[in-house]
Structure formats: structure tokens, C-alpha cells
Image (tube, rainbow, N blue to C red; front, side, top):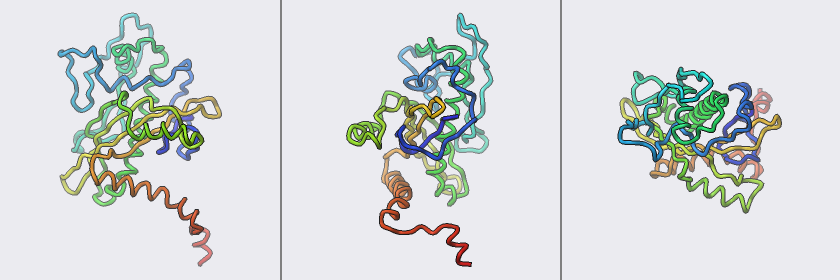
Length: 273
């Protein structure tokens, strides 16, 4: 498939993270574009005091019952993610909403015009992108994982589709000056994930990650693409240093090339023997 994620939200930029044939063909979505915000993650103005919000997701419990007038039987089984949940191995992993729950959430938020036969594809895309976000987070957390031997865990998350991040605003402004480098579209969604980072033993530190979701241009086969911009929030000095070191490591090969430094390859190593 033409779905991929990258750390640079520019539809004009080529990435090596192009993933194919991982989710069902999305073209039965009849040209449907991503909704302005994931309908699963945020209570709306119709929430009543009888709705019980889960503090870990900021969502009410979602029904698996069919909607009045619904003509297609949507699956009600939930799919397990690969994302560890909470600060204990006994907590298992997070589960994704079933297609029926996704559809019920859309109706609840006034998005009942979504074609019923597109919901399963939307759930697959939703799950695929979140798995991609977690892979990016694991890369950010890799130095700490190697130090402690314990993988990060996802404590909670919330959707903030109406809160444009400062970085997304900056990219949008820069697109008018450097259109060949930065895409002009704002994110169609944003998540804030609270990740638990192990500091040794039973000590876990909470780290907020910001995830901006962008729509990219269709790939050469006419399939839609998406970009994820994942990074720790600038909540403290540690996160700022982590982002600087990450940026420095990404830029080092480019800087070395600009300075005329040659990078030793495996072939060079073989020649020495």
C-alpha cells in the first residue's frame, strides 16, 4: 500500500519507510478523505453527565450495537495492538476499536454520512497509523531502552484535533517561503500520548509525545498517503535536549558530506583485510 510515516511532514519528500500490502485496499472508501480529527478520541459537546469517560483515553465506552437504519453488519471484534499498556506487564496491550464502535463514534460526533462499507478500511488505516506512531516513539526511546532493558509503555492518550501544535504552525508558515521543502497543509489530526519511560527498576517517568497526522499526495498508483510527525513535547529541559540530540544525529551525515568528510562503508572495511 502507499501508506507510510516519516518525521518530516512534507508530501513532496520521498521516504524509505514506504510500506506496501499491509492493509486492505482503501479505494472502496469512495474518495473519502481523512476526517478532521479521529472520532474515537475526544468527547464532543453532546456528552452528558451520564457518559462515563475513560481517563486514559478521554472517551466514553462505545457501544457495539448497530445504528438505526444501518444496512451492513460491521465486525464487533476488537484487534489487539502491539503497544504495551500501563506500567505493569500484567496490563497487557491496548486494543483498537472494532469497526462497529468506530462507526458508532462517527455517528455520535455527527459524521453519520460516512459510507458504511468504508468503515473497515478506515479502522485499518487508523490502526496502521497508530502502529507507525508507536514504532517512531520506540526509536526515540531506544537509548533509554538499551540502558534499562525495558521497553516503553503507553499510559494514556488524548486527541487534540483543534489544537494546532507550534511546530505544525511553523511548518505551515515556512511553506510559503520554501514551498519545495515544506507542505502547506495543516495536520488533519493531533494526538498527545503519555509514554512511560523506565528509569531503572520500578521507576517510570511520564513523557508526553506529540503526534501530528498529515495527508500526503497520492502515490504513483493513485493511493493516498499519510505522514506522521512524532516527537517529545517541549515540556522540560530533558525533552528539549533529547530533541536536539535526535536532530543532530539525523543531520550529521548531511553535515559531514557538506564538510567533505567521507563516510566509511562496509566495502572500505573489507579492503583493509
